[in-house]
Image (cartoon, rainbow, N blue to C red; front, side, top):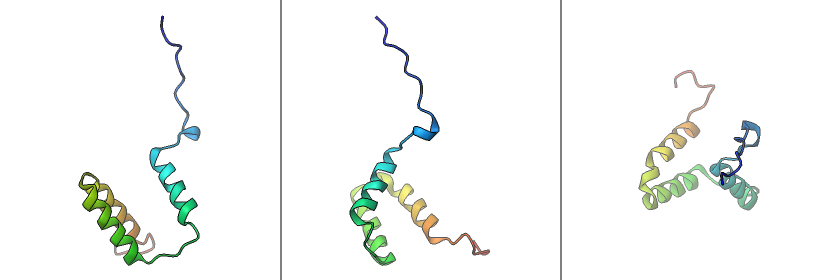
Length: 73
């Protein structure tokens, strides 16, 4: 017996795994103010624990560091 075909999710209903983590971050710490030094330290600690994610963290850090209005970048 074949399982019924399940239609693929449309983009408007897709929830990426990272969205859940971002939502949790916002819910738990959304009212806090942190320094960029604190964030950099936490990102370094994460890479130390999860070296496979070094490239993704590097890309995120570069994205956050660059200002879209800065013509030199």
